[in-house]
Length: 91
Image 1 (spheres, rainbow, N blue to C red):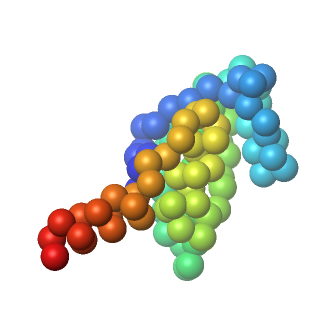
Image 2 (image 1 turned 60 degrees about the vertical axis):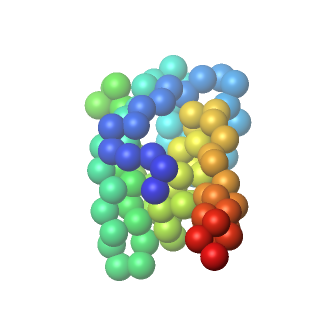
Image 3 (image 1 turned 90 degrees about the vertical axis):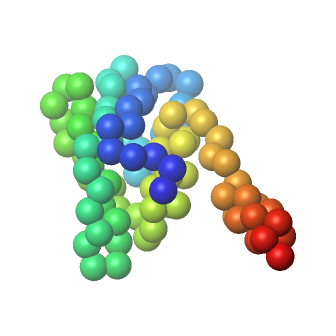
């Protein structure tokens, strides 16, 4: 899990919003408010500066991280590669 509760971002006109993202409003700041595992999905709750509450469901935390990284305009580290490098060092 790369992003934790309290992670914040603002929606700017530079970000391409997909169908799932359209619930987020341009010019509004959001904070990751809560993450809950419900059955086989992870529910991410975002609180907007306008007091809106948006819930998004993901199959795993990595999928949630990718979603947030797009909204923040960031690139995630390649954790798979890092784990492989650590395994080589340990051998």
